[in-house]
Image (cartoon, rainbow, N blue to C red; front, side):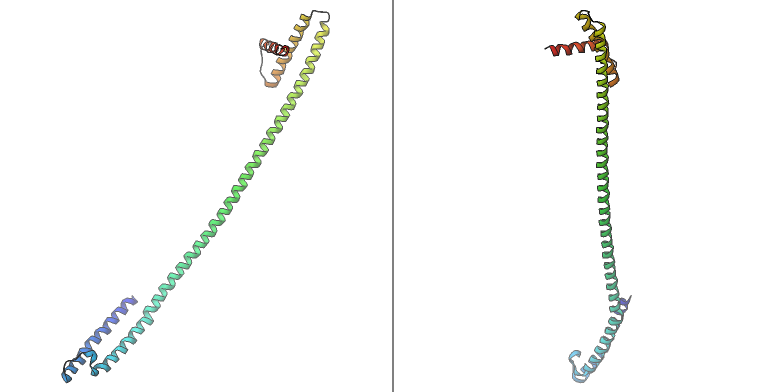
Length: 207
């Protein structure tokens, strides 16, 4: 709006100068013949006067209307730029903080996963050792019972042929193996399978 007003005023001033200068030029031409108005000494005073008036008016319009508006626009633009820079810096700091928190959370989760894995491995190893110890203890007890039963069977079959003693030992061994398999893995094995396994074991030892 101010720039438009400045344009209107400038047009009016120029129109006034153009309107007045031909009158002075015609007067000079009547007195001393046709000349350029700009070079006619008679019109110098009026030209200087209107030039000064035009300069003052234009200076006033530029200084009071145009320049403040331009300065205001530049200041608003600078404020917007500074505000955008501040927002960008704030967003940058927030993004950096979010990244740090994410890395911390990731490291914490990784550490917890490693701890959980380590505890699980330790628990599995502990339970495996306990199960192995329990199985070893059961086997030891079974062997002791088997030895006692074999000794008792031998004592009961004293004076009997060797085949009879061997048969007794095989029977006791079958019972012990069946009992051990049942207690250790919970599977029932037929006597024929046990007898086949015992026979294979004895043959391997004899070889």
